[in-house]
Length: 207
Image (cartoon, rainbow, N blue to C red):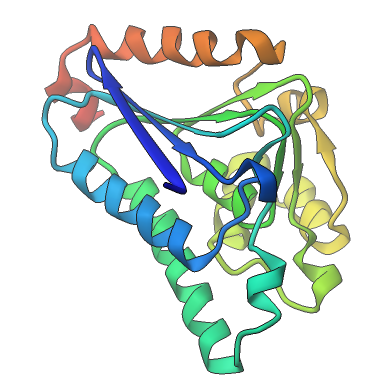
């Protein structure tokens, strides 16, 4: 499966599982991830969600260019809309969502991370919106969410240049909440999630 879900003690860990492709999004992965989030969103026993990528190289390295290059213009538009619907679904989940960013978060991967409520980064994390180099703008909500998160100046620089932002810079500009060694990332994300789980679910959802 391209997406794995594990639920323990009220925390759902959702892992994008295409490490050989740096967890890049193809149509199947988007569909499976959307389906998993739909089920989780309706599960009152789940109190917090952690999104991460399989392996230690990438959270998600954007769209699968191999698949994208074979799409017709109409299919490409449909793919983009599907990705946009995915990030919207993450943003609208009733539970708090953490992105445990374990490596590259490029393009749609970055847009998925910024749709989450919290971002915890490994020291090897890299964020980028490189779409301009491919002749397209960020299409999964990055042009709206990134300025709200880090301000219009930093957001414009990331979007217009496509440059990579390392973990420590991401922390400095407010793109992430914390940075940890990669071997500690999963535990740090879970520890923060458990701090939320112990609180009133009604209060958390209403906040």
